[in-house]
Image 1 (cartoon, helix red, strand yellow):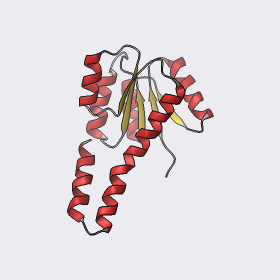
Image 2 (cartoon, one colour):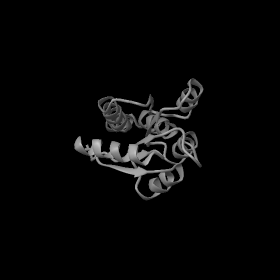
Image 3 (cartoon, helix red, strand yellow):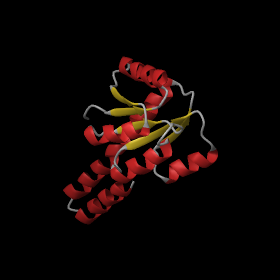
Image 4 (tube, one colour):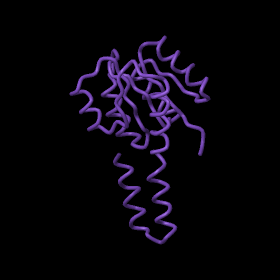
Length: 151
C-alpha cells in the first residue's frame, strides 16, 4: 500500500504541531493547516487520504470544511476531533459522511488506530470493485465505484 497522506486541521497551533510530531515518531507524516480555508487550499495542492479536522475554528468551521471537502473530494476520509462538539454536531457530521467523530482529549494510540482504519477503508471498495471486474461482473464493479463516489 502507498504511504498514507494525512492532513491535520486545527486552529490551535501548539496542539496540531505537537500532534504532527507525535505522528512522525510513529512514522506517519502529516501536513498541517491552521484554518478551514487553509485546509481546502492544501487539499487542492496535495490531496490527503485522511484528514483530522477540528470542529470549532474561527472563520470557516469544521462542519463547513467537512461539507465542502466531501463534495469536492468524496474519497478523502475525514475524522472529526473536537473538544467542543455536541450530540447534534456529531449527528450532522455523520450525516455529511465523517469517518469517525472523536472527542478531545484522545489517546494518541486510539487516534492512530482510527487514522489507519480510515486509510484502509478508503481502498476496500476499490479493491472489491477490481475483484468483481476481474471476474467479469462489470455492472457490480461499476455499482461499487459509483457508491464510493457518493461517500
